[in-house]
Length: 112
Image (tube, rainbow, N blue to C red; front, side):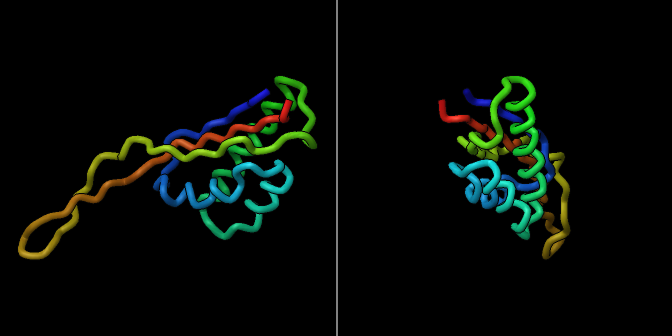
């Protein structure tokens, strides 16, 4: 049975978060937690929280055993961009600065 956890509107670009989610996909939960603990990316902290939340959901809501769980899917989708800001450019022009957000979803499964 699959269990999921989601963190929405994370103030980080999805491209940066996807670098971390690719590291843990299709791995056992304990191995994924160890990988995230020693990954020097800022996104690893967010993905780790979501992973631990999915594991807690599986244990508390469905009585699954933590030893049997593995990361079935880890996805970082694009959220809405925050209001555009403007930055001065050459010759009196301006450029837009988009503040990107992400929706991080981690799905764990027990393989049954």
